[in-house]
Image 1 (cartoon, one colour):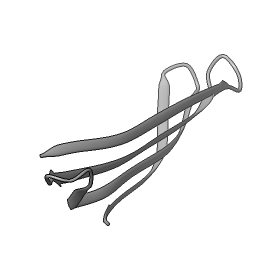
Image 2 (image 1 turned 180 degrees about the vertical axis):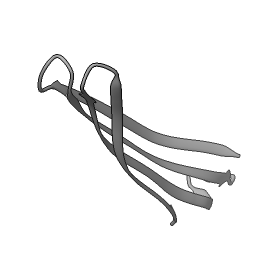
Image 3 (image 1 turned 180 degrees about the horizontal axis):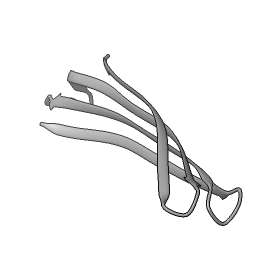
Length: 79
């Protein structure tokens, strides 16, 4: 059985001030398992796609209170 995959991830951080920042994260993968035949082609058996996207705001309120706000989006798609 052969496994093929294509993955990427990206991360971006932007600092608004000394105490606050915005961070973005993206991850995507395409995976496929194939059953080899005696010819040059292979039959796809299982295929799927995963995606994760996240946005985070980090800040500080006053001297001590720090906070983090995140939005997360996750998908799984059989193809």
